[in-house]
Length: 409
Image 1 (cartoon, one colour):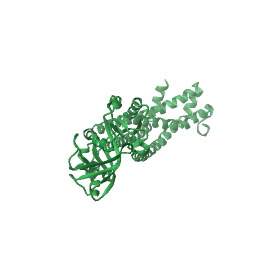
Image 2 (image 1 turned 45 degrees about the vertical axis):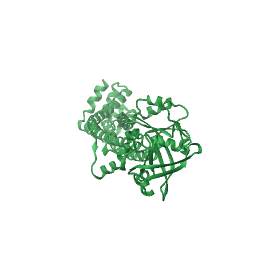
Image 3 (image 1 turned 135 degrees about the vertical axis):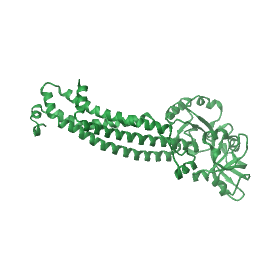
Image 4 (image 1 turned 90 degrees about the horizontal axis):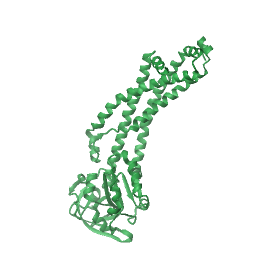
């Protein structure tokens, strides 16, 4: 009975109900679309940044994070990694040796970050071969090196020249070797261009005398929403003796930039909701004040006060639900369309993203949490807006209310 009565009451003033619900729906629509594009872009950037270097997750020796020492290694054996291969949500599993070493030509020398990689698996994950601007990509059997464009320019070397490496190997051994430059790699990030050098994993293990060991196992996943599940499964597979680092730990600068941008978006969203909150509060207040005499009659004729309060709450909830339903119904087709057909950028912005190795698109996230978040905000605003009208009804004296005017308090 209360639900039917509440439904009838909110349509007494059709224009006011429609305008209030429309304001909620519009704000919900804008917030959903804005947050979906934001979170989609964040995921896009995280995955692309991971492919350029760190991966989404890395398995390392617990001591490697502190000192990056070539002595802190993990096994590269199939026995060590077999349980991890069984995790369905892992799309790529890459063994690597990363260590700083001195690179030299006849005239100059420079400290570089040398990465020993499996060329085939690495290219499948990061498309490293497309960054070759001169020479060729490493094959599975070739003994050679690919150097960053900045490194080659600094050392005065080109394809076909020899480069010398000298540094510390495993457990104090000398790491020294002479390699032919097979290819020159261009990165859009200056620091990578001036520092990165790649050799095959087999050559790196021989150079550093590590045996069948690696500094890290790099894990790539395409669905970032499965990250926490993957990490838990990794802990189950290796509960001790292995450090599991996700992209936040590996790329703190990227996480900070995302947090700052997300805060800006949330501030804009909550400003919209504050405006709508005032409109909703005004509507609920008017619905209460203009009906004080009606409420007094209902109380005087025997209606319990708690039933009256429930009636007001139901009326407010119906307006909020109406706005939520319209907002979700109108936003869903837009989000599904752009999820399957993301906006493709053009011009200078597109070229800049292509140079970074990113696909020039604006993807959309369809994470259910985004919808739940907006619904919770609308419900919270409705509850807050109800506090004063409920307080007025709780203090309402039926006799004074029947007199109306200034007596209704």
